[in-house]
Image (cartoon, rainbow, N blue to C red):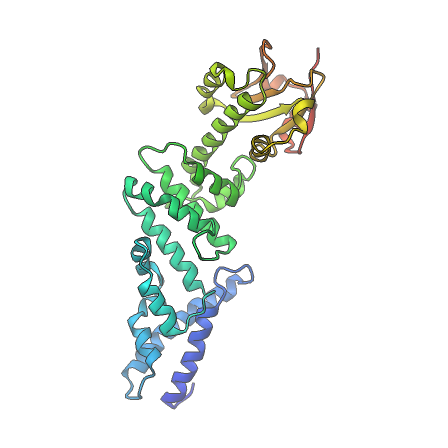
Length: 339
């Protein structure tokens, strides 16, 4: 409300500084404060026009704001995306330095998202070429410290785009980033459906099932390589079950006494990815383990010990205690083999 233009410009500069430093993606930012931030952005844009028309001498930062006026739009950093994707950060750095934007500003974060979107806008092959670089950035290994919500948004964008590729073989770095940042889609379905969405804002089922398939195939291979008596010497069993991976709705891994406390990098990696799907197998030999899977209305149990048969049960005919064990999600629930 200052009548003198010089004072108005000083007040404008103070509010502009608050605009840059607002924790837009922080947990402490409420819906009401974000709405206020949007209103401030509208006011700053309108007030800039008013100041521009005045004859008062303008400070250097005002010319810089005119040059980077897109920062006061609904898509403030989108125009940085293509250049950042090429590794050119000159325009972004010019905006940051000339306008005094803090290094921890939302501007830096939104620029990361713009780079992700620019990458996702590429055709399949160019997108795949740059994917690993984008994964490293989304995982916080690209020189910019990312908050939790920004990592989630970034990885969700990359997963959704990869799922739309005509050919989408398993991408281990993308799989690990998705599981590590968004979570295992088996165990954190709600989190996946909240963050990984399609153009309509609906859960992206294609992306979720793609990662589900990758996890299932890797765990199936791990079971027969690490937990069966045949080990890596005989690939027939793993090849057999991999054919049925798309039909497997759920999987569990029942570990015998020998594997329950086994160490080693490969075992620990398997147990980490199978977290929430591990059972303790009792009533059998120490070296025996079981691969348990639900396929439609059937429960299939394939034992790791050589020569053991595969058993098929009606899911609806299973006893309540066993159903509760399988669906509880409790870590290392015991399951007993009746002889």
